[in-house]
Image (cartoon, rainbow, N blue to C red):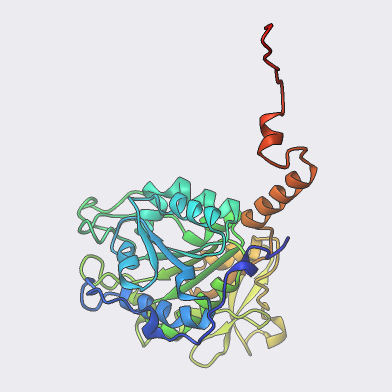
Length: 347
């Protein structure tokens, strides 16, 4: 049954463009917010995917990211805080011929929505999750979130937070995630490519997007995005290719024992043959977790994309099997099944 549901989503009979998906609503994010880049990437990727416009649904919870349904010209549902995942699950199960996208933030998904988040991933429902990670609660004006770094000084942690943050990639893979990727708002072309790969994945795809909040957490990723250090602190992985990075592409990652280590090609007898080749389809999650946890460099791109049965296909398969084996073929069969009695005049 692999891909049965996916193949039922109707393709557009005519080419669509970015403008077909642009909303007529005023976008009310702060000027300079990284969300604009994410929106632009989504508007670019939807026509590239090629489904009919009415086959897209965007579901959200609460937060700056969750305004997303208003800003794309598709069907949409603005839910309540943390509940986008069960709503999206219901949408997809009730109408499997839809392409369902969930816009959520680090607080919406991993705090109040944390339980729903891990279970939609565990079930492997065929939906796409866009996780906007700005390491802060922006809409409610600057409280620390589940991804705020230890020691972060915010309105609710004026002396520094003493909570250990989640690593979204580690959490996703630990919940049996079949697809995890990471993008960043300053690289819209890369993000568009990642979103297209997420859309192609049959199952739950989670794309963590490192996104700057210019008002309440400005510069959260400056140590990665500064032009002086960007090439040495960000590493883009590609399936089937050696993991190399750096301004001169002379740095690489090797597997040493059960750890990943950054090396310089040409030093200490290190050659390109020693560099780890990225395999995003490897069922064992060990190396994927190590890549997701790296902080210097931070890994971007598709880290994990493993084929696995989806909830959608398994449910349809089960329905078909039950239909074939069940003695109940119509309503009369149902009404006459089980214990029945015939009422006569004598009775």
